Length: 130
Image (cartoon, rainbow, N blue to C red):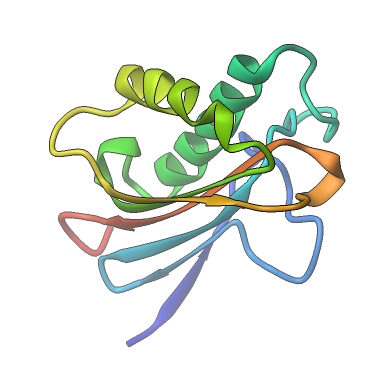
């Protein structure tokens, strides 16, 4: 099976030796996204809700570049430096996803890249090979 690298300027550029996403058949593996503005490559200003929305916007942009969307996510991993923000993640996810919701893990971590408070990665399953 061939692998295809996915890239879009609508999401932050990779800041290391990884791709924004890789498609293998109908499965797309999205790298972790933090609340970076894709134009400035700086963390977004604002409260935790703004940061969570930016992360989901970044994931949506990469998903779109792969030919899908947030509703094609079958597995979502949420990394938080403070798990007390998890109810807010649920609240915002309810506005971005529809049922059936993806399988999900929420992981409390000591630190994330660039000192941010939230990161998410995902696996998409597309209806076709794209």
